[in-house]
Image (cartoon, rainbow, N blue to C red; front, side):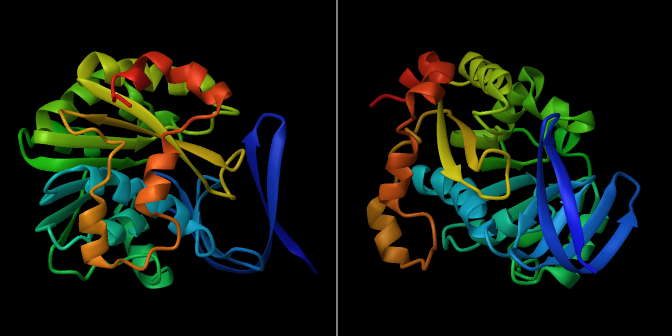
Length: 284
């Protein structure tokens, strides 16, 4: 008998994945949590019936979330990841030798525990520079002013408590938590299906930060396959990676390169029309 998992990506769009085995299924204090072994995408993390990551395509998302802000920052030493309990963004952050402390604030500790056990290829929680705080990310940011060089929000979709992560009050707290030259990035959904959200986030970041921009990448399991990332900075131009540092590190990435970094900020017209005022702030 065939078993299929189906995610309702919009009211009128579904994606189905054939499942080889259900490796884990529970309801934590915060959400329904599953790890599926799928035929097409390998092991897959699902929260509240929404695909979060899979072994086959996780690198595309995690590399672009981490390396764009870190290679744009002149000297990223302290990094905070909010959400991202699967550990993929944290893993990529820890590939940077300049990073002295990489902290993860995840509200649902069960996600971290299950990912550590069942998704070991995606994470690197045992690196001595890494610390996991099981706490509300918004409160954590508010309690740590002038602390981090880079803050990355790897959140679920903007529903329920996650809605606050996309609002101006949170962006102002992030600004206060960043040190000089600080850079912030958060996933901002699909330009096909979440156009109003992109406009809202970009407008908010532009009000709070002197520099704001949008970049994009491809993630096959996410709605539309084309995904956006909203980035803001206290000074550095996020469009300009340190290519010399990249070359020196010799990272064996599968998606990110400095050329991809620069190209990701070149937006198709239907996306550029959502963010044109904020995009100009980053300069050409």
